[in-house]
Every structure is written in structure tokens, then in C-alpha cells.
Image 1 (tube, rainbow, N blue to C red):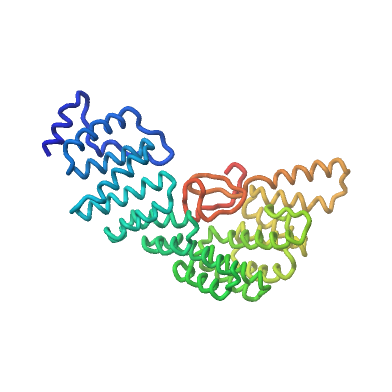
Image 2: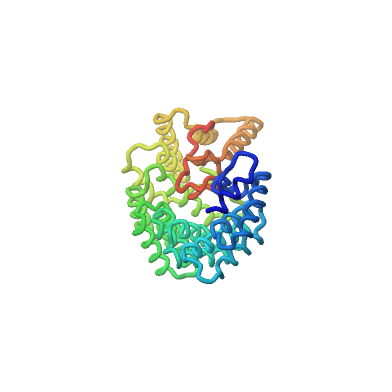
Length: 381
């Protein structure tokens, strides 16, 4: 360790070890003067001590933090081909090489590097986690599910199993698709994605009894805070299917799409069995609106008993009331404009970071939290 003592004894200001120079996360600014000073001194020490593997690894990290990916990669490769290098250090070099390639945007090379690290280290969580994220990003859903399974992330595993099922359904392989949906439910019985996909496939086949059964079981298994996602996802899919038959169609807004009676007759009896719930009542009103406006109005009024400040219900009651009121053409035009613009408010919010979105999500695009979606029941949320 004499070389290390010699290095720090040369410094004229407060000393710090290599671990005190944290590698900035991707997208953050580099550490300018401190980083460059560390690179300079570590380069000098590494040159005089070619066997100091930890110093080479730290130096590569600092190059990566500065965006000098080629230099970082070269350092890792020189270490990997070094004869008689301890497997622990070789695994670390492969892992850091994977991070270098990831930072540089070379996804395939990053995956290969992490896989090599996993072979040497036994796929510890850091490697499996990186592989899970990269394979998911590249669209290899089956592999992503496998890697998330390896780190015990059941929600993500089920999500990518459902993605695999969707690929099979799109390839007109329904039996294979259902097999992957069942795998997802086995991995995580509360998977809102798997229950929703089951309902969507039932809708495709007009299998209303099966749809009602999947919906009822889904409500029992899914986290109650996510129950509304089953209805939102199903209605969004149904709206898109109908939009293919219509010249102009607004598919992203509540009550703009009116579900057909067959879907309502499958869904409403299940909803009637549930304990009073703000969002389930709201979606029941949406489902009812196409064939029974009076029932829809009654359900919306019940939501206001549960939460008088629930703005979506007040908005739709206003829209329904327009049909019963004699309005001047000018006033009706203004009111319709107001309702149209109010419906454009972003309805969903991430409970973790507060991101607002107009369409539902399973993974927050900002903070990467799983199943953190919530409905904006108050405008100020």
C-alpha cells in the first residue's frame, strides 16, 4: 500500500480516497475540477503500478463520468485480457464494461458484457437488474421476464410475461398467448396487466361470460387502488376497436365513448356486487351512459356522496344535464367548449413523484415506480 500513501502525501489540500469521487448518474453534470484532478493522479499511480487493478477500475469509472467512453472501454478490455487476472476482478471489469456500453448507448454490447459478468459472478442482483432493464428496453420481453424473475421482482416479471403474451396474440397464436397470461398470473396473482389482458381477449372474442368472470376475479386479486385500471384499460381498448369503424372518434376521454350494451351487461352486474367505491361507481356510470343515462346520472350522484369534490363526476353531470335543459345556441356552444376543455385535463398521476399523464401507465415514465398510478380525484392533485 506504499504507492497509495505516496499518492496522497503529494496532495497539498484535504485528502480523499478514490471512493470519495462518486460516479455521477447518467444525465447529471460531471464533477469538473475534482474529477479531472482524480483522473490525473490515478493515471500517474496506475502507470507506476500496473498490477493495481482497483485503480484501473476506478480510473475507468472516472472516464465514464466525464463521457470519455472509449477510454473507459479500453481500460476494461485491457484488464479482461490480462493473464491470470482473479475472476472476481474480471467479473467486475465485465460489469463496468457493461455500464460503459450502456452509457454509450450500445445496448447489445452492454447486454453481452453483463452476461459475461453474470457467468463469472453467479448473476448477482446488480448484473441481473441491469440485464432486466436493458432487455426490456430492447423489446426482448421474454428475457426481461426471466431476469426480473431472477431478482425476485414479481410485478415486473408478470408485466413482461404479459408483453410476451401480447406478441403471441398479435401473431394469431391464441393458445400460446393464454399460456403466457397464465404464467404471469402464476408469477404474480395481483398482476393488473394480466387480468386486463384476459378481459381484452374476451372482448375480442365477444366472450361476455368469460369477461365477467375475469373481471370479478381480477377485482379480488388486484390491489384495490388499481381496480379502476381494469376498466380504464378495457374501455380504452373497446373505444379503439370502435374507432376503426368510425370516421372521427375521441377515444381518450371519459363518456366520449359510449360502450355497447353487451359490454355493459357483462360489467355492471359485477360492479353492483362491490362495496361502494368512488372510481368503480364513476366507471359504472361511464359504462351505463350509452344505454341508460338515468342510471349513469344516479351513479355519478352517488360518487358525490362519497366525495363532494370529485370533479369528473360534476363535469359529466353537467354534460348529461345539458341534454335536458333548453339552452340558447350561444350558451350551449360555450358550455360544450368548457366541457370539452375540462375533459382534456390529465386524469392520472403518479403517487410517488407526482407526474401527471393523460393516459394510464404501469411503470412511471419519470421515477420508474411500478403500479404507482392514481386517478386525479381533485384538480389540485
